[in-house]
Each structure stands twice: as structure tokens, then as C-alpha cells.
Length: 615
Image 1 (spheres, rainbow, N blue to C red):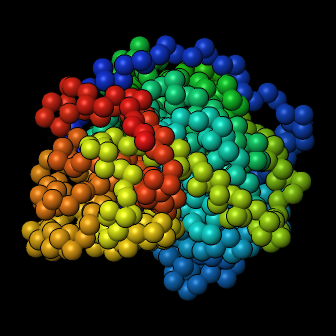
Image 2 (image 1 turned 135 degrees about the horizontal axis):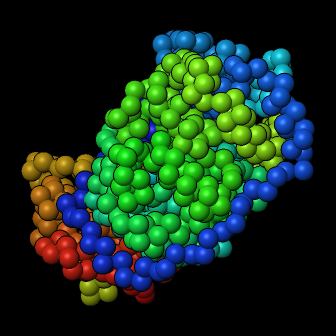
């Protein structure tokens, strides 16, 4: 979701909209493979089904409706949030606290966000989780709460330092290691569980074949469905092996759109055959790996359903394809119901009812909970939805809660936080994984690795987007600090994503006093001031190393730069890895997981999938 307080925010939004100037050509993803074999049902009936069914039978209709919702709530505490958070809760939800939310609506899940002040630090998160469980369990027929968050790593994460933060999906795709993906899930899952978070909206299973994709991009493992499938399955195994429900998203695939479903209504124009080959394999792989939950996409796929409805509200897609054809019987959760992609065609009162009719189990973060909750209640009372239909979804949710141990052990201990979260071993593992992801794309005259003797003074300039996921930031400062620790004398000069002529002139003047320049770039376009900055820095005669800190496609716009690296994100762990590669402490090992097209002819591939230099 976005960094602001809008109820329209959706899971996975970064608050930064990428606007590359090129549209991919699907032919660039040569090597697209045939669909994986359909998997059988991933969730057999649990041994305690009779007990869970008995729980459902004792629930009131109002409690059943509530169990289907996963809701945001402001505050660091379940019962004593700050006054500003009480005010925000009253304005948006009509309650003061998480405890009041649970008492009034009996919601089955709560989602954490940094902007909602849920995730200040690990011990507080654990206390909040315990407070939420206590508040729910003390109610009549009280049930444990399934607490979730978006912890994708890379540019989307809700729990920041001192928790361990890993490279994002495209970086992991560049590393290409299933064992690294599994280790990421295992460690990240263990840390989330220690803080009381039992459902993670990760991994992203979208195959990103569109450089202009404004919402997925580096959140995807890449453009090759076979490679994406393998990494999705590995990460699922890691998370779920640590007792956290993984969530493959965004079904049926969000990788080929130039519209952000947070703010618009995308259409995927893939044929049914292309969908089977390109978009379906990672979801099949997730189901085969026993994925606990799958998140829907707020987009239209006419080849799968020509009704004009978003996939979240499409029975042919969610029941016909996901349930019946792919054999999935786990939990289906919507993306945020506050996103524009699901609100375009129907009003907020119709959306949750239609989602349930389509086959959804969890209704995530509606903009108006009271409206949505009462709409579902009314639909049952008036016969549009049956109580048996609700029971089916509630049973799936309760099975997942049981599998995750929430009925046996809903609380977490502070000792577990100290023992698990952000340990030295976990941080070292994140660094090792990152070192296998940095991708060297250009290295004219063997400029890299950069010699400390020949180039002792380094100027770091470039874009400084807001630091993602609670990392240190700004990127230029992190890069300069890391290079200084490696023996250079490095200084940082932020020039922003749209440097003016005066800013460029200032950077050029500073470059003349340096021996080499590192330029951090962020979504460079043909008319971008960032491109002019790099060109003028190169014209000084100083060696320039460009580091793409988000999309690797920047390299196509920077033909004058003698050295170019792709870091895939501007989190600390990825920037430190880029610095170690620049300094020669580690060799670049990453390989492009997406093709990069020529800037002047997008139908031509400049660097194919699998390209990457080394020393």
C-alpha cells in the first residue's frame, strides 16, 4: 500500500510510479516455456475439520461476516494508540482502537502498515500482535486473528530495521538461486512469526514482460515464466517452512500492464494461449508447492472473462480457472478493495458481495468497512449470498489459522524477538544473497573494479527517492558511506530524479574535484534530466559508474556511461552490494532476469535475459 493514509491504497504500492519510455515486445522473452502440468488440490481436508466446523456452526451471522474481512487499523497498541491514531480510526473506521474494531466487526484478520504506525520496531510489533489476539480471544466465541502484512522485501516492505531486509524479487531473479530464495523466505518468515505476523503477501508471481509496468517491475522475479516459477516455489517453501502463510500474487497475472491498478483499471490483452504459457506457470508452481493463499488482481483479462469485470470479481477466473482448473482449494484474498481497479465498475457496497460470489475468501481493506460489512450481511439476509457460501470461506480461513498454530499458540514472546529478529547471522545471510544479485552490464576499458589507488576520491551523485522499507537512505548517502568503509574518500551530492540545469552544473563542478563519479539513476527516460546529468559528467573526463537503483532498463538510456550496474532497488542491502562490486571486494554475479530493449528501437533487444559481465 502507499505511504500515505488513503483508504484507496493497495497492497504492494511503493509510492513511486515508474514511467519508462519503452513498451516491451513479448518476443523479447524468448524461451517462454509451455505451461507446467496442472497441480492437484493443495489443501486436503484438515484432521480437525470436525472441530472447525463446530466452531463455524456456533458463530452468529454477524460473526461470520466479520471473519471474512482483513482490515487496517491505526496505532502501535491494540488498546492505547496515540491520539492522532485514535482520530484516524474514528474518521475512517468509526472505532478508536484495534480492540474496538474487533469487538464491533469481529474481523478475521488485521493488516499491518508502517504508515498506520503498526510497525515501529520489533518488540512493539510483538506487543501489538499480542494485544490484538487478547482483544479478540476475550470476546464471546472469540477467535485468533490472522495478522498479515506486505513484506516482499526490496522496494515493498512494512517492517523495517532492525529486522532483516533482503533484496527484492528482481534482484533475487538476477541471482537465479532457488536456495537463496528459499533462505530468504525461511529467515524472513521466522522473523515475521516472532513478531506475531502469520500471513505475508509475498511472493509476487507476476511475470514482468513490460518495462513500462508502473506497479510491478522490480517486484517481479523476471520475464521468464520458468525461472519465475522456480523462485516462487522456493520462496513459498521457505516462508511456509517457518510457519508463515505465503501469498502468491496477483492472480491471474499483473506483469504486462502500463496501468497501475491502485489508480486505474488495467486490461491484460493476452490470449488464452499466451496466458497459459506466460502468466499461469508461476501460480501453478505455487499451488504445487502447497501455497496457503493467493491474492487476486484488480484487472480485466478479456480472454479469460469477457464480462468486463476485474478478476477479483470474476467467477470464471477465480472459481472456473483457479479453483476448478488449477485445483486450488486454499485461501483466496483480494488485493485492497480501496484500489481504483476494483472500484471502477461497481460501488463499494457491491464489490465485497461480488467478490464472494466469484470465489474469494478474504476481503482485504475495504475503504468503508461499515458499508462493506453491512452489504455482505444484507446480501445473506436477502438471499443473494447463502450462509453456506460464507461457511465455505470461513472454514478455509479457520483451516489456515489452525495450520499456523493460532488456536494452540496465538501469542509471541519478547525473548523470541531477541532470539530471531535481525540477528547477526540473518543480516549476514542477506548480504551474501545480495552479493549474488548485482549485475554488471557495461564495463568499458575494464574501469571496474575501481582502483582505490588510482581513484581515491569518489563523488556519489544521483536520485534520492524516499527510502523504502525502513532502510537507512538516502541512496547517495548509503553508497558514499559504503564506499568510504571500503577505503575510498566518498562524498554524496543528491541531484534528485529530475535535476535542473543548475543542479547538473553543481554536480559537474563537484566532479572536477573528484577522481571518479558514481551516479545513482532511477527510471531514466530519453528526456530525463538524469540522462543529461550522466552525459555532462562523462564529458568532464572523469570515469563515471552508473548504478540503476530501480529498473535495469536505465542502461539503454545511458550509452555514454563507461560502466553500468543494475542494483534493482535502493535498499541498504542492495546498495552495499553494489559498492562492494564497484570496489572489487566481490565479483558481479547477477544475470539479467528481464530483457533490456534498445532505447532507439524497442523491438530490438540490447541485452537479453541471462546477460551479465564479471571480473
